[in-house]
Length: 144
Picture (spheres, rainbow, N blue to C red):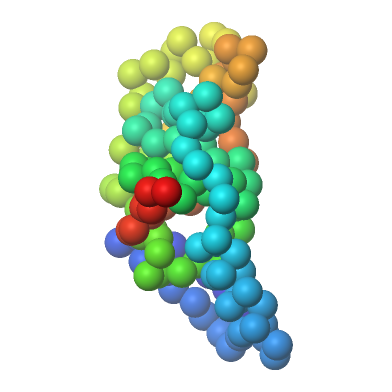
């Protein structure tokens, strides 16, 4: 089975689901909907070149955040279209417009940075580009 996010940010699955994977996916969907993480500005860095927050692990997706979130690409293995909208990939595209105007400043701090990829400042103030991200939006953020 292969996953692709095509230009219109729709999830396309090619191939058959491996035997026994359906119960696993169901369990993962329930896990994502039962996340206990509440959004806090101090816990989720914002990208310096795109309007979204970075979520380091799927278990940390905040249940109450209304905006765009960059999450690990492993979400494609447990994506629930009723819960999340796929916005696009975490790099410059038609769906995700990365602000390249600060690239020279970032490159001076991190020579390995790429102008087309999203990034954030870590706690020490250094620019960091996370591993592959998918940009999502929670369709029904909860308030508790």
